[in-house]
Image (tube, rainbow, N blue to C red; front, side, top):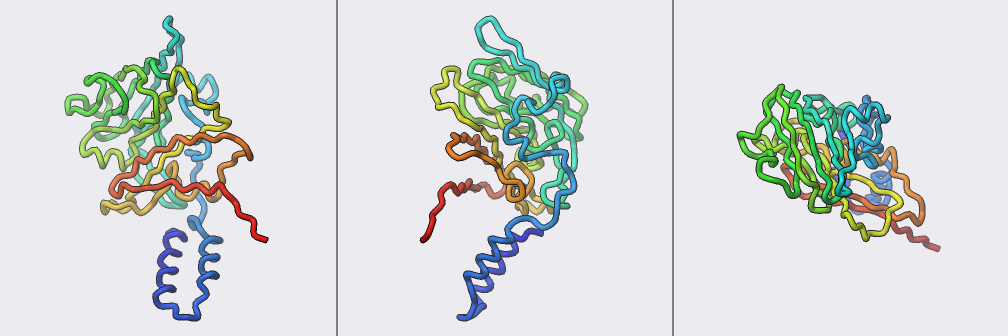
Length: 276
């Protein structure tokens, strides 16, 4: 299925059984040249590159965006941010030609990124168009009746619920379905990023901000992930590298939402060594 997984096994076999004449350097070079997924993606309904810089539906034209997001200035200087979310069962492509029966917020995995400033009011109308009871559970501060974790807070198929809470504290958070079993509802795709900016922001202004969600998919439902990705589509940035300019300050908002095997790292190469 994947060259990357295949080359790890082949390299291991060469080290054990290859003998003294094995050209390990050639094996390593071949692995690096061919890293990535085999084949081409067949669908384009979710763009991991666009997702990097999308929050509050800012990728949509204004008329279309107004169907999902509205912001209103309040007398105290904060904002009221209103969202329309819906839950949908949908097959998504997680590797070239590999489709996964996901449960989604607004037809995508991860769900739409919610972004606000500390003290803003967030109001989300969530409609469950799926086939199971679901919720939205936001990390951060909120009252118990807005938590979405109790059995009497489950939203049944066809029903809706309005969540309302203050955006706090500032930081990088996430949201996910808290229906039961929680691990199943998260692993099936019901999660997203929730960013709260500080009201008095003393951070240096970034030239580029990127939203990255580390996730995985158990495509054969054996309780272990077979596919790993950043923003859902495996190896997508291998074929479509993230472009930044020399000298830019880049800020990455990073979330690990992995289920089953919980450890996942983020490894960035940003130094070059010239050898003479």
